[in-house]
Length: 311
Image: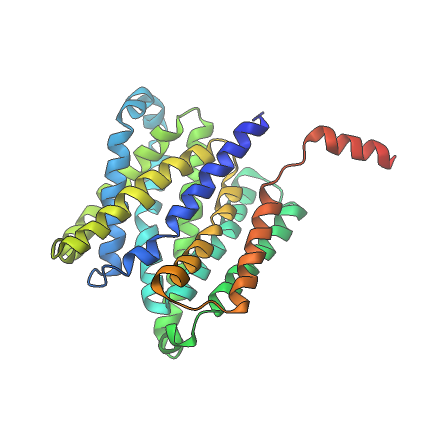
């Protein structure tokens, strides 16, 4: 059983990862010439290979266990490769707001359903209540965006395609998070699990990078943005996310990442210059409440004491 300090250290690691992921949308605005597929492939492709290189030692130490779980590693890598392509394309087709709502807001639900189906994990009332608050908050945050950001997409098939791609992103993100937790539960170190699955996923994305990555080398600015995306929201954030998954369930970890659109919205206001309405601030408040309910644990002795007093 994990101790409370370990549990909250894991929560903190996932929170920091979510904050770093929230910077990607603003960072991408500084390289408008790079396509969504180019951003996706350099972020997960180069970043994934760097994660694997940083994890060479634990990968070697756990090579036998990783080989025995090779089908899980391959399945995780496939989801790792698909996720960024779907996520950044969803924002391209249906707008940043709608793309984020579907991709990030649906991921905790997908993760919980995966755990329910494969692990027979019960969907408790506390989690259901927190996720309703969180998803409602994400929707409010998205609808607080100026209508012009998604007006054109809403009038044609691009919006539908963007929503479908967002659903793909949500499912693949939830799936590789769940598989990573399964690998860790098999006794594989989090760095070895994350490094192997992201390394193989990065290899899968290299052909996409070769085809779409030309504009990245067209200017120092584009190259700088690409390196930031690969090193910070990718390598650093996923190292932290892996540490978090070692002590918390995948469904809780993906619920915490609802913090990502909050950070993205705040950066859009302070750096990009967008306006956030009262609805948007209400969305942020609901997401914050969701995270508080989902992550705070009541010590078991207090629960027992309360139960004894009730009798």
